[in-house]
Image (cartoon, one colour):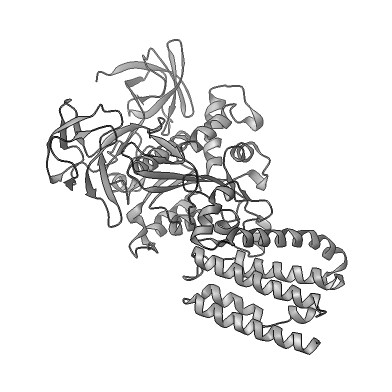
Length: 582
């Protein structure tokens, strides 16, 4: 395609204004002698405003600007899994091998390896009719992911006139259609354009996270949206990393969007060493990381979100359940605020652009569980961390996010300081998927799942009310019945809601284990309240040693056997107390 040229008119940080450039909105441009990559974000007459994804120091008016009238795209094909990219899909490990520890400006590297050959296995025969989205073959991408080679959604389709098994690079043609279209293993797709599907399905299947407080009290559906807001040090990143490790999503896309360098380094170092608990293989076999730290160019932060969601949609189209972790959308919003101020736009609340709400909605609306073009069912679940300044949930990013997402996991710095992890506040958090997921939990766990969850929540809410009185007069002054409620709530907090992410048996809690723990605490709690009604003093029950053994169930490999043992011991001690009072 023929290049079109213009010249730099003005430079303001990452924003460059070019004149004489015949460009369209969101066209990719190459700025200056070093050809820094950028994107057109505003057109006014013959002047185009460009956000540059690299450091613009040294640029000056008069330098050339080139465009090929193509939007910012990503390369989709075998090789994405196990890769670590920056915000515009440059493979960081390849960049390091070519340039060292520091990326030079204007560096351009293919996202997918052009030399590596993949073994292609056809799934359709010559003469078969294929449509946009149809699967024509597959490639073993990693030990955990079989990569489906699909007809690009923007193709017309037609009859297969040539297809054969063999080893090919991502640029080789693996199939030809009678329409003249050639199918390669690699697709090119614009990051701001959602990939099409046939039908969006209702959120009736949960994403099992392995975290008891989430799966029981605030579940998220596959294809759902969730926000994790919380102040510094409350555990946003650890929570998202735990979700990436243990959730039952088949593919993980982790976006480090504007996070501190040390946090992102921890992710990059830790993830390649993690073992997938379901398969025993390396977790990176089903993971791709997008790293855009806070010291990287601000504009690339904005594109990293779109790069990640486009990759997620691509694997969804193969029929996979994908979980996308965005850490954090606040940094993304801050990038938009900086670009907006340099464009001299009228600021909205707290200086954020007026389009903040629509941009957040545009991103979260790309989640969903869908029937794909090839009749498979796949999903993209988006879990976005929010970093409100000072933990203020009333600030614009948090509030606009809450209007869009269906699940709110509120992290609490006070709980974190008390070493209660995960530090999710059960009184502020909520899930709007509870009703739609009720049927699944009833069928796959127990018919009284929702009844027990509701009971646990009512006990925790009652405890909050009683705590106000306790602070005034002390717990000993309360009637025995209220002391019993506080005791059961304490058992729920310490033995059910808390979870140790560093213990191999407690880091992941299956739905079965979660139900067993919840049932044990609530069932023994009922017996406690029955004894109190019979006249047994609460202080005698509170001092029982057997209740503290519930913690052993969390850490036991054979938790069912341990639960039976602990249950019998509690029953025995309760019987002894009852006899002594009768």
